[in-house]
Structure formats: structure tokens, C-alpha cells
Length: 208
Image 1 (spheres, rainbow, N blue to C red):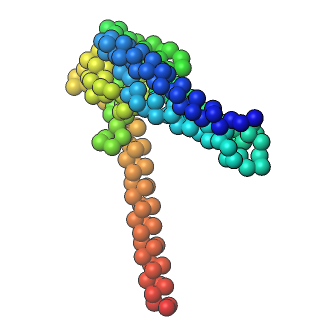
Image 2: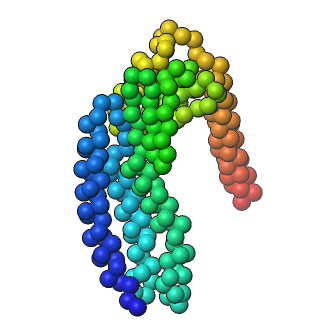
Image 3: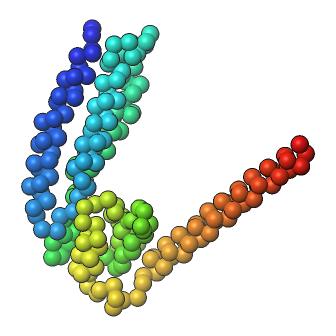
């Protein structure tokens, strides 16, 4: 059976899917205090998934391996890309007066009363918001969310006490100490590696 025609069909099928997603995205983002990933991220992962799915179906791509077997060999790749696309499309953070709701493959509601502190790490390259809950749990929010800076301010403004009026929590201080220690270890490894490379180069020059 010739699977080559499926490549064009899969790419054509992507157009109405992306159009539907874009319309749904604009409709949901009209809600107040709704934060989500750019739909372009989901579309990109979906495109990757379709391309990876169709490559094994191209004439001659599988060689001596049967096309169904070759397709299944690529299943973790295209399946993972499609799953990531679904996650990017579905992920939402919605804030109301008393709680924030996180929706992805499951829905979770977190009352602001249970948030004891927050911190933004990884700036400026890969910012991430960490919220600390009263039960010791940490909830992370990607800096790639549209309106990330506003999300940080919204969470802080809805907490029982503003960040300027409360001391840092023990969990927050512990995490900061751990990140500082990890950074020092990474610096030691980098500097040590540079010294070893320089020593090896000098030794080779001396012997040679």
C-alpha cells in the first residue's frame, strides 16, 4: 500500500485544526486574569508531530522495514510532540477573587489562603514563578506564559499579606540557599575543567 499520499493529507488537515485552536484561544483569553502559552508553541509542536508521523510513510523512507513497524519505532517521538502540543493548548491559569485555577490535562483549584510565599527565579533568560503552599508543596509557572509579569503581580495582590509586609518563608530561603550552593558547585566544575584543559595543553606542548 502506498502511504505517500498521507503526507499531504496530514499537512492539509493541520490548517483547520490550527484555525480552530486560534479562535478558541482568542475567545478564552478575553476572560479577565487568564494566562496561557502562546498558541504558536502548540502549533509548532503539533507540526513537529505530524512531520515526524509522516516521514516514515514516505516512499522508500523505511527501507527494508515494514511501514507499520517503522511508524511504531517513531511513535515515542511523534506521540510525545503531540502530547506536548496538547499540553500547551490546554494549559490555563485563571485567577478570581479567592483562588487560582490551573487547567492542563487535569484541573486544580488553589485557594490564595494556602499560598504562603512566592519567588521568581531564572531571570532574565528563563524566568519561572514558584509559589509555596502551606502544605510544603511548590507550584511552578513558566515565564513563557503570556502576561507572566502580570501573573506575578496578581498572585501577590491576592495573597492575605503583600510580599513587602511579610518575611520570606523558610521554604523560600531554603530554596535560595540550595540554588546558590548549586551555582557555586557549577562554577567550581567549570573553572576546574578550564584549568585541567589548560594543564593538558601545556603538558602536551612541553612533551612535544
